[in-house]
Length: 575
Ligand code: SF4
Image (cartoon, rainbow, N blue to C red; front, side, top):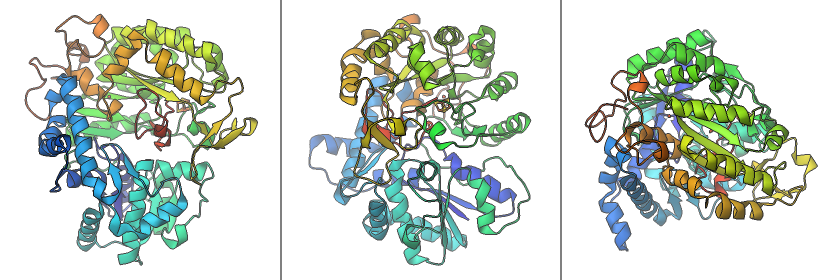
């Protein structure tokens, strides 16, 4: 089976979804080939010969090779201004390359002025007009090559972000034109959400373009679809066809997930709850063995655990059996983190950064949301993590049905008072999942003119409506001096994917400037990882010295409503 990760999304590590499917299929005797056209697409656009009309674009085009190299070297993560300039320039160069096609491609986005990924008819149109797609020369050549070298009867596309949907359908349009005999399967987080929230019927075939949708864990249905016997029920991801690609990161990042779904799944605002996705976890012993084998085989410099939440049993396993490489991922503010000794052991296991969902600092709001966290415990966890020197990427959410202005101010005050324990912050405005249990109780309206929208606007029960929330975020939250300083540290565009590198590399003018001495490096001996991070260029760490991170909800639709620091290309609804 040919597995394809389509353009366009942030590209800092091999795509785990197709690597998981490749591992599972190979172990069950079904050969696979994987194509990461997202990363290849980025290199393709940045390699085009282009003319520019204005000075900035000419400069951005001239500097694109140097800027790409910069993001792939350790030095960029020691100097935030250089990093920001490189990211801004690269987005400008991508815009210049994609503009002639009537689209705007970026490092984490893809916008088509004529088509919306939220309209089924536009997806079909993207498939029919595949020759007009900005990536068309690339995917036609690469897929033709792959099919010539690797005869197969099936192609699977993993579609995780809205920014990938139009390109995925262009690829499907091409495949069904040149090889109508091939079975085309669509899976990935976006497809899962569309089916789970009722936007797409499970047997939707897009007028015959698609032979099957595989929502949820692709492993569950793929063998049956292919008519292959099931010999093994689990397998580690197989990155063989992907690790050689030059991703936008200063070291090799290897993604791994201990589980799919959320073990808590009770937060009323969260698509995980609305979609009722099943939680499936790998046996701890198996997971530890798989991570160890992947580290031994691929020598990554950073592990990215992509679970919606790294459940406490896996955190305990990591603390007990360190993977030998720095790592980061999402966790909940569970009672486990109120134990300072455990946080120290977590740090010693290589934990560089945890992504944690505060959402609100009003206990009544947290209780109404079903978050299951307590502010006194969150306070202790933040203190313990700071003392253990584990970076914190905090997620806050404004405008939920239970919130009002005074509750939002309590969140602001809570965060500001603990700014010295928070390295990065993601601020999101609440979007109501269409399948949310709360939706029937609220007066709702469409955000867009599109039949595939996963979210709806709603009339807030106490008048705390979107405009008021947005103004509060801009005027009161973002403007708070302590919070402003945290927001200034957020890596633009790449956000949490690059944040660990700033923690691992920079000096005290970066993360947690308030409580570190000048010249002090952030992690190091606290790390317990021999030699710290394996940068891929130059010395072990910039600036001398040897030391050293579905969301989880995928779609990116919420990125159309940026508050401050909202992650482009990712959902606004972290754990
Ligand atoms: S917000 Fe996080 S913890 Fe809550 S249901 Fe969603 S994924 Fe689970």
